[in-house]
Amino acid sequence: MLITQFIKLIFRKYFQSLYYSTIGLRKLKKLSLSNKIYPNTKSKEIIIYNTAINSSNLGDDIIVYFCKKFLCNTFTEYKFKEISTHKIPTKSEFEALMNAKAVIVCGSNFLSPTMENYSEWKFKIKLSGIPNFILLGAGMGIYGEITPFSKLFYSKLLVNKYLHSVRDEYTQAKLNEIGIENVINTGCMSMYSLQEKCNSIPCKKAKQVVTTVSHFIRKKERDFLLFDILKRNYEKIYFWPQGENDYKYVRKYFNDKVIFLDRSLSAYENCLKNNDVDYVGIRLHGGIFALNHMRRSIIIAIDNRATEISKDTNLPIVYEKDIKSDLENMINNEWETNIKINKDNWEIWNENLKNQLGI
Image 1 (cartoon, one colour):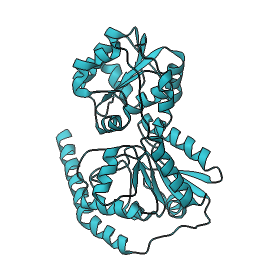
Image 2 (cartoon, helix red, strand yellow):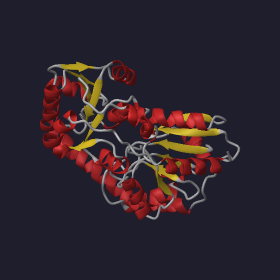
Image 3 (cartoon, helix red, strand yellow):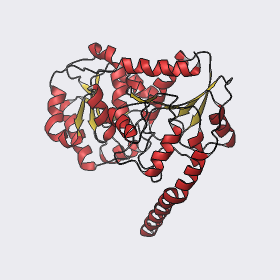
Image 4 (cartoon, rainbow, N blue to C red):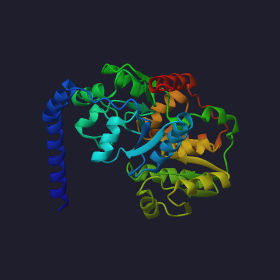
């Protein structure tokens, strides 16, 4: 039964890829030659294209929290409407996307080099015609060469009128490779205030720790090693389930001497505020949220997000391959958190957006 389901899945993915690579590409080319739909210039509505609604990852909620805080404080004269990126828009949502003053994507792994095979954005080809589409701290979710379909789609979507904010140098370079030059590396909105908070983050190890793992990218050998190191070095271990299935995974394999937090941002925030804790874990935005609460944090880099962001910002990480050799020393050594944020780039992006919106 499982083998049959697996074979069906492979065939479905193959034909989906074939569709987008052939029929989809022809449709997109036809669309690119059609007249663009221009919005109502008198519109006072900004769409927050929300990467957290319908997401199974509370890291998206962290990103969107900081994006919304910035947007609502900056564009006070506009009305805001939220639409999920994780589902196909309804007819009324599609009309709202097409007629909004601006459609602003709130960060996350929104971009994909192979949209025809994998994309966290649930899209239809006609969405490439959204006229005032703007990236805010978005990233390329996986490594890889950008396919012809993705190149044409992004070339139509990311128009020259706007500067697009991306979270790391890698994402900017990949878009530049396909001729999209109106891109600026601002970093992730969730890190905007971290540079000013660094002096308030302890240099020495705390007595307790809060940790995270990823059920989605689970490796039992790596995670056993992580928990073993934490148990040797901390008096108490809190676990925050950032992902939908993280709790079941940890409860099954790593239950011993672990205090489980509720799966909510408020529960995590209460833990960070009311306990003397470090953060040592696999979830990137679990660590960034801890840094925003002035908690010493070490993020285990298991994919391109933490790796590329750390290159640009000095985010404190340990590579997955170095957990055994480096993590324990980093926990016990004294060191300063020294996050670097390019505020000049943020200001350039913000001024461009204000100018285009006529503010």
